[in-house]
Length: 97
Figure 1: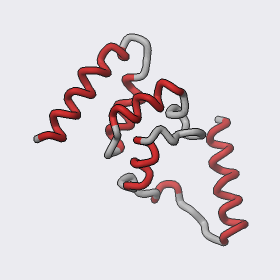
Figure 2: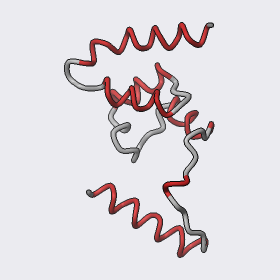
Figure 3: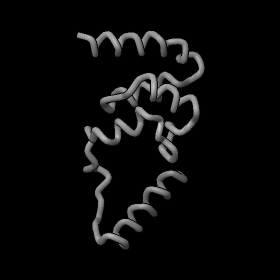
């Protein structure tokens, strides 16, 4: 709930400062710059992506689409973490083909 409050406050400040109203439901999911920042581990303040382990995983995976980020979050759990190397290998194989 705290993160939702932060988002709401941020949207309010953007409106006050810029006069622009941002609809979070219209934020593009294919923003290359956002994926580049995540791939560099620049995830401070990004819910579920800001731990040192997730930053490391983001650098290794270099996500290029929202499903990569969903997989990161799903795999970075006790029990599933053992599957991370296989997932990384699979993604690397897809990129080569």
